Length: 295
Image (cartoon, rainbow, N blue to C red; front, side, top):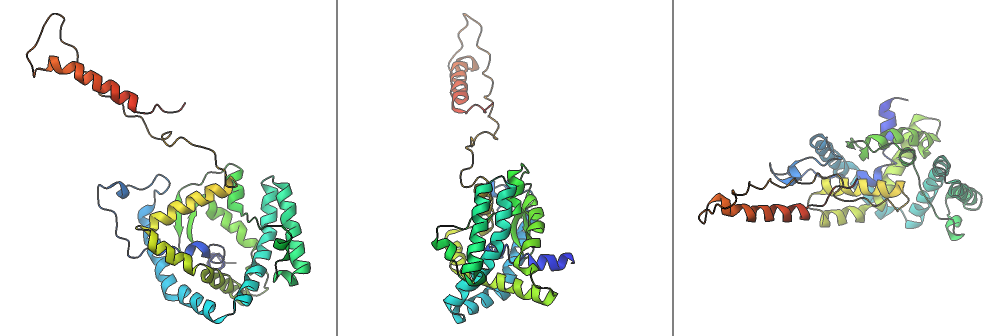
């Protein structure tokens, strides 16, 4: 399998974020503004924004129109069945990732969910497991790598695939080996399944993309921050550890106070000797106002 085929198949997994990667009209931040400096997690922002604009052009020209037609023409019942079937296949790999992360009970529940929907839900077209209280808890290999202690690495916008990190990009390679697109024995069949994955997910997110247009002034930054926060929450199952927001910010050292005037010597108003007490007081107040870094 060539990398080009793998990249095409990867569209299905990240279609949920591909549809939100439009930013062709976002102007660069003015020089000298806070937004002009790359975020600590996004050292490749200049390149990422170019890829972001490219993804937006592809979405507007191809993916979004096809997804809109799919939503308007295909009955909701059929679309729900397609989503259930694809989700049931994805639950197999989610169960494995739960076990790899040490969450054996969740892995067993996801395994029972797959068995229930496969045997009682017409191969996964129906979702009786949810009715029985077995909720879908999706996990991927990028999350597993995070649980194992691998850091995010820099944020990266992948062509056609959308937001990711260096760690999640490696995880994606493993995820795609267990996707629905691997079931067909021919490349044509794999492409067809991938197309269904992409269009089905894009159709389910049409309203979400409209909301993004309404709330985000800089859609690139909004999507980047939302993606990183969502991935962090996923790794910690919605309960990330508390971090001091000032922990990574160096405290500003107060300016040294001028030396006091020699004892017994009085200087006229406006001279440096009389300004020293005020400067020292201001420096002490500034030092108290700056939070001390956590040890």
